[in-house]
Image (cartoon, rainbow, N blue to C red; front, side):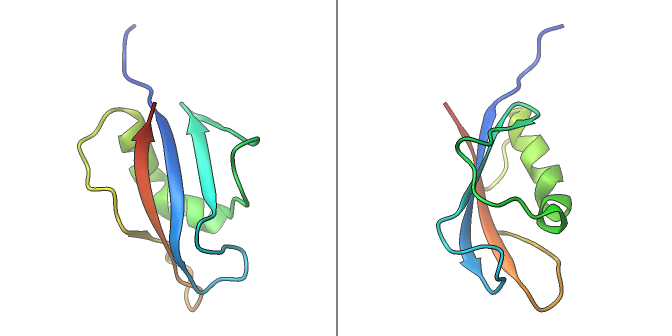
Length: 84
């Protein structure tokens, strides 16, 4: 089966959370987290933005963001993009 499985980069553009700072990145190689190229990964944030990460992986034509973590009081905003 042939299908698109892009690399995806998630970048923190605003943070009010102690787990992230502006400029932190999370990189995916298809469905796998690229641990060598990624900073911290909060599972609450991933739960909020992973549907968008998945769409970018599959070649969806989405705006790059911002996408926001829904954790109350600790807002983090992300930009998401497909990369080469």
